[in-house]
Amino acid sequence: RQVLRDPSLNAHWEDPLKRSADDSWRRRAGISLEEGRSPQQVARASMLSSDSWSGPESAHLQAQIDEFTRWLEDPDNRIQQVASLIIAWLTERRERALVDERREAIEGLR
Image (tube, rainbow, N blue to C red; front, side, top):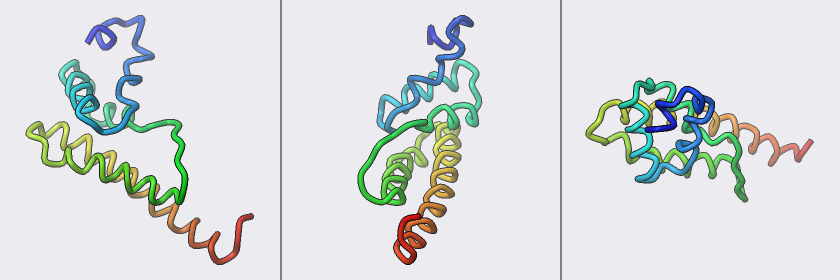
C-alpha cells in the first residue's frame, strides 16, 4: 500500500505484480485495485516483461493461462476481470506462437 500511495514510488507500483498468479499475486492485485488502480492497469502490470522457459513458447504461455484461470472464479469481480484480460492477451500470444512453431517445424528456423 505504501508504494501505491507514495508518489515518489509511482514508477514502481507494478513491480510486486510481476510474478506467478499465486495467492501473493492475488493479494497484491486486490490491494492495487483497492488503492484505485483499474483492472486494466493491474492486468498490464501483471504481465511478466521478461521470463525464461525451455520448450515451446506456446506451452509456456498455456501454463501462464492455466495459472490465471483459477482467478476467474474469485469472489471479487474486479479480480475476475483482471484475470480475464490477462488470459485474453496470453491466449492471443499463444496463438501467434503456435503459428510460428508450426512454420518452424515445416520450414525450419530462419
